[in-house]
Amino acid sequence: MGRRAGLPESWCSCLIVVAAVWAATNVNVAPAGASVLPTIGVNYGMQASHPLNPDIVVKMFKDNGIKKVKLFDADSWTVGAFAGTGIEVMVGIPNNQLEGLAKDYSRAEDWVKENVTKQMYKGGVDIKYVAVGNEAFLTSYKGKFDKLTLPAMQNVKKALDKAGFGGKIKVTTPLNADVYESKNNKPSEGDFREDIKGIMKPLLKFLRDNKSPFVVNVYPFLSLYQIKGFPTDYAFFDSNHGKSIQDNNINYKNVFDANVDTLVWALKKNGASDLKITIGEVGWPTDGDFFANPTLARRFYSGLLKKLASNEGTPLRPGPMVVYLFGMVDEDMKSIDPGKFERHWGIFRYDGKPKFPMDLSGNGNEKMLVGAKGVQYLPKQWCALKEDAPIAGNTADAQGYACLMGDCTSLVYGGSCNNLDQRDNVSYAFNMYFQMADQDVAACNFNGLGEIVKTNLSQGNCLFPIYIDSAADQRLPFGFGAAILAALVLPILMLS
Image (tube, rainbow, N blue to C red; front, side, top):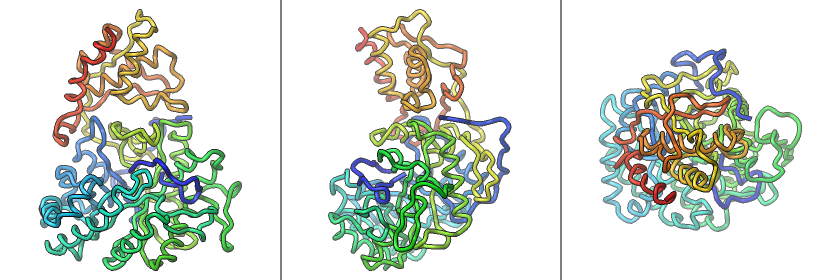
């Protein structure tokens, strides 16, 4: 999921995408390999300090019957974990690689050799798509990738053809819904933004010529989050009352349909009315904002999945829709510039536990999904503010530093830990820093203000987590724990 700054103030075109239950003991668990809509996939990102082992996550895909995955890079360990599973894979190329691929064809050849050819052996990975860039035309990027994306796609396609995969693997680029707009909120007024029309037309031709889908990320949650006065029910699929948009004898009762049909009109006006549309990201976060909680996430997914099961599509595009849910697990290293909710999009927690009941078949028989198996946790201990420590300036400084280096997004207004008192707020911050630093003793010092305790500090819906024994060191150039420990001297200097 890309950054969301600078999106248009429109219910149709601004889309990009109360805590109740984390895991109720009286909720059934879906059986392994449960029925799943064949058009459903899930995004799998790893911007986490302590990511789950990819082998464990792939087992979660298999246990829940999910047959499609969309990745944001082509990390060999992650991609390779899908070998022999029959799961259809979309591998990604980050935006920071676009310039090199656009300007040097040999880099595209090398990329295909290292990230596709090595995985495409008999019984290997079923790579179906290469996603070149991610939301590269966001207005917040100010045109940085505008002239690089299509040349990079063309070079990757040429390299795939040369390697013999051109007929099997399609090249596309996931775009944010801010690439099109409607000045009066009606889908029929939809068109691509004026500043990128000259780029979109050859891009559409490339997609049509190669029978690749137009991949768009649509986020009803962000309409609710960003637009003051946006009607809550219009973000969901289960209301026949309240806000609707009348357009050419079509009554739009939810913003998802209105948004997708705005794209349909934009494609039609630019000579690409027959282009297939794939929803690259759609979801609902569960923490970090008043509207981000498991209750509303369950409501959103329940309505979306029932809609997809009906094959009703949208008014202008009836029929089955290929949709990738966003996302698989929470990612505590994502940028929070768009909002504190950015780290809470997962349908599973950071440790692979399901958050709320879902039915991926769309039949409404909601049960808890099958969670991660074989997860190893760090020791059962937490970092807390000492009972006799005063609430003073030094404590506030320590809490600020802990939140800077850790993840305090659950403490915001409407968050799952918003109701903690002042001392527990500090303890929450201390513990997040402590866990992200692999529970190193020095990470619970805070100039003598912190102490390691064996009592679980969680309260109600507010989870004081224990982090997992992670795969980060094997995937990243260096583990996050090592990086954070290198900075442990800073709070001591700060508090001196």
